Image 1 (spheres, one colour):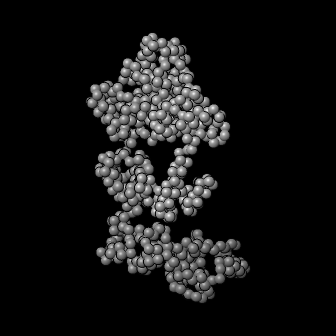
Image 2 (image 1 turned 135 degrees about the vertical axis):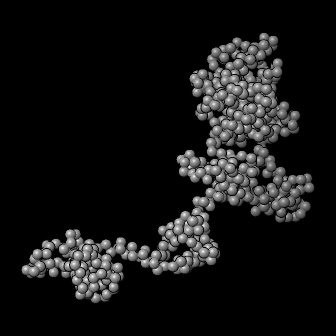
Image 3 (image 1 turned 30 degrees about the horizontal axis):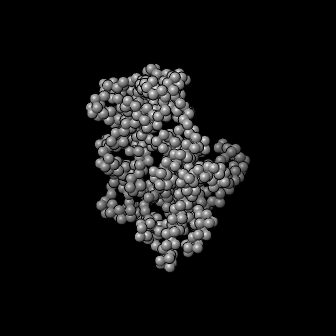
Length: 580
């Protein structure tokens, strides 16, 4: 160390450890440091530990004073030998201060000082979730300290915590486990509960627990880490022990394979109808058809046309167990299209090739890879041809069964397929159309306006009214409900011909819609109530003696009025009855 008035030869730098407020004294200290290091190669380094530098006005002023001294020395004989024509002061004060502050904190900030800051943070924020880089107003790195306490207790870094210190930290909400570790433990516990309840670990992506934990997404994240190799071995073991499914596709394939094996054990073969669904909801028929399709596509045993034909056959089977809707216009039937809303199902997924092991397992089970759509058409065609030879026509209702085959339905489906643009239509080749024509196939059934009116009259005689749902289709495939709805709409718009109006009224049609009839019924019930009780103040739960829920009806009308869903006439009627 160099002090005032002391000259020591052969040193490389100076460390200032005693503070001074005198700029002159400070300059003398620096000067002795420069003198000590001038005979050395390089430049002397001055460590100003106690911030004496702050007594100077600025680096620029120090630089100026040095330059004045140099200008004087170049004319002094005794100093010419050590003269330099340039001089620069390198200031690294900021970095040094950070270093000194860190050293100071390590040396002078005991555990209790940090704890007091943690306590202040807890009282202010209500928790102790401190970010790693958080620094207090007094300059303490509280975030790093909190992290260190966790690591010390976990034994991952050197140090120790007393029981008293642990209890004090617990009292202010200290979280000892890493957040990711806590999240993992939560997910693991929820997975165990799911497996206990459902018997498997195949959790859908959108599944959330009762308390809102996104178990499906968490499991997906675990699978992603597992594939990348970034999941620790201990975590992998815990998850597998809990019932984790790593390869969902393989797992689900095995589930369907076991279902197919159970079917084989029960019925002796794998001739599974396309619409067959197991008791627990697996679409086994669809799945098996897709395995066959994947096999033929992979091994080049199916053409694109044949593939389309096969898919059409699968869809035909699906339609037997799903909803469908027939679209008509004012002239009658136009097309039939599938509208069954289907949930995403593994059984219906396509485009995933079979592995060699899966092929071997299915073949060992007795699967037949060949398509049966063509043989099905041929079998039904021969039955239809026999009927034609016997009766001279193919005129039959859609429900007609001949020799155990629902022949009427099949012929109706062929008519619909020819009109549609579906894959089933592509399967109905021109050659098949010609063969069907030869046995008297009628592609356009007689379906005049008068015929439908007769059907409506028959319905009225059987049921006593024509209050038919729009979705009602009679047994011959005629969408009578939709047709009646169209007649009513034309009547309201004033475009229904007079003779048709008269015919329909003779058949028993009521021009009011179902909602209008319901409104009239409610109004009459309310009038009856008012005549007896002399007011319209009705509770929501009130029920008439005949079982009519008048209270609910009045409540719905008030809501419709607020929502602007009543006509002006309906609002007027209700106002007269005292419903505001």
